[in-house]
Amino acid sequence: MAIQPIRLFGDPILASRAEEVDDFDKEIRKLVTDLTDTMLDAPGAGLAAPQIGVSLRVFTWAIDDEVGHLINPVLTLGAEEQDGDEGCLSIPGLIYNCKRAFHVVANGFTMHGEPVEIVGEELLARIFQHETDHLNGILFVDRLDKEMRKKALFDIKESEWFGLKEPEIRFSPHATGGLGF
Ligand code: NI
Figure (tube, rainbow, N blue to C red):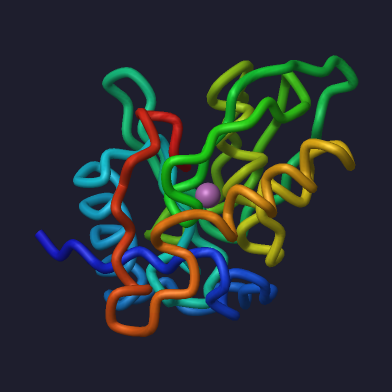
C-alpha cells in the first residue's frame, strides 16, 4: 500500500498537460499501484497521475468490482450525450451536473506496454472522459455551462479547503459522496 496525498484545485500540476509514458518500467508499475491504492482508499471511482503529483499520462478507475488502469489514453467519443452528477477528488465535496458523451472507445496501453482497447458507456465513459481531461490540465468545472461554472468557482472559493497552504493543501478531505474521480 502506498497511498499518496491528493492534490487539490489550485495546484498548478492540475492545470498542466501531462507527459506521454515512453518507458513501461517498474516505476510505471509502482505509479499504477500507488494510483490504485490511493483511489480505493479515498474512495474514488477514478484517479489520474497528476492528482498525486506525477505529470504522466496514466489513470486508474474502479467501477462495481472492476479495477483498471490506462496509459497514454486516446478517446473516441460517441455522439450521444449523457447528463449526470460528477465530482472530483481534487475538488472535495462539490458535485455538479456535467454533460458527457455516453459512449467512449478508449485506446491506450497497460503498465506492461501492451496495447488495449476498452469500450465504456455511462459511468465508465464519464470516468474515462474526466480522467483524460485531468491529463490535459482540464478540470470538470471547466466543462460546466457558464452559469454553473460561475457557481462552482464561487463554491470552491467558499470551501474550507480552498487556499490552504502546504502541507494541508496536499491532503484531500475525500468528501465526494462516491462521485469523486
Ligand atoms: Ni477528478
